Length: 339
Image (cartoon, rainbow, N blue to C red; front, side):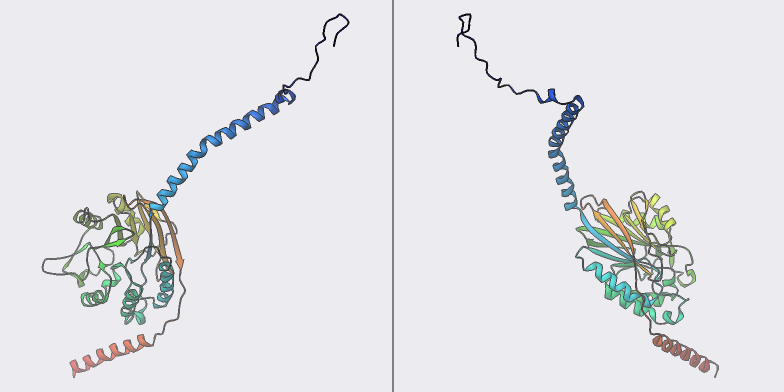
């Protein structure tokens, strides 16, 4: 097109350059947009790190060994609790995870329940064999029957009966062992038994020497050095005494206690040692579920639960019969003696 001045006018065309969006937005919206963009960029940048950590943690969990420790103490021949305990034990074993079952003593005798005491110990041992206990520590009540009965009950047990700090004098053999080693969860589990000095029937066992529990445990640890990956102590002694022992023997991983009839909904922790107890009379089955590093034996996680048991009626006719038989035998002996 030729203008009036004789020159070709330039043809005006719309600009192809898009306007800057930020120029049309309020300033605070622009700031928010930039912050959002930076957050998205940071999230994208850290996603690989998060994924790596999840894989790493998952790998740790995958390589950890699960181990369930079931424990009882101070059952004291309460036969009405045995069936309920047995049901809970069977349920735990049905999970397929490795399970160990222990008792910390005062299981076979109680003078407060005489009808059960005269015959219940044999039935309790038979029940413990049936549910497959892995080991038991003797309690002071278990000694009250005398050495002959203790030896008889120990010989009937399909599991190790333990006590490391009642040491027989030269020429004598105790009806119990100081420790046992069990294979579980890919580890060698050392189990040591110790007993309190309280209420021991010393006159019945003049051939046994009492040793301080901590010293006895140290002796066993030295003797078995390099032969175990995990240490459990069955102690017929109170939680507070177990904590004192754990202070001077820090290599104990789990301390199952008794004697004081305490309950520990949560484990008492002393150093790395987990200390638990399940009350008395079979009211509870203790369950300590662990995740353990099989290489170091270190406990990665622990969950403790006290499972309440059902009570069942007990037929005492056998107790009455046994009591009558014993009384008749004593009366006959007295008649023959003074005839």
